[in-house]
Length: 231
Image: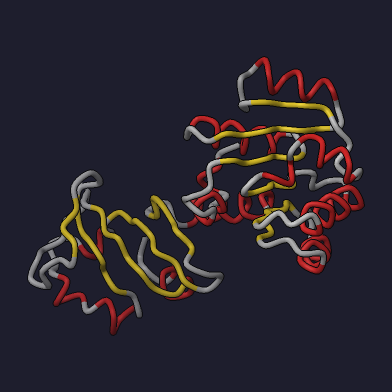
């Protein structure tokens, strides 16, 4: 699973250094592995001993232990309540997911991310205190649809559900035209933050700069307006 498409890691506070991931299915293992590679202290847990053993053998986490996360005392003994951030990656087991989220929030964990499998599941998780709810299957599906229909979009950073910053290939319609000629704010409702070759960018580019195919633009705007770009 490609975590870049899930986006939620960018919302985790940078000062955090200790994480717990509860649930070591596909999503949980991806989170553990990504955080561990970034150099963070990660504790992985699951009720399934086989999944715990796999996480340890694949070196996806600093530590991994077997426990039942619906039992508050088990979480306490494992030191889960001392973590900066807890990610509840149980997802497919609604009752266990909600009870676990409630347990860690009631114990005082400051920041809890929880995986949801449906809108109703997500609402329940927020009700019991989840600070951030993610829908990885939905987000992955949206990312795939966007890749198929808008291949010119290289990267997307969501500012909120309605607005994004995207990195896009300069479309053929913009070839050999200046930013001033294109009037993207008036024509599409978007603003260009930078133009470059994908490695080096010019910030706040000169409106007289000519664009050409192969260059990359960084654009900010609402998602509906971004979708109107000829990508």
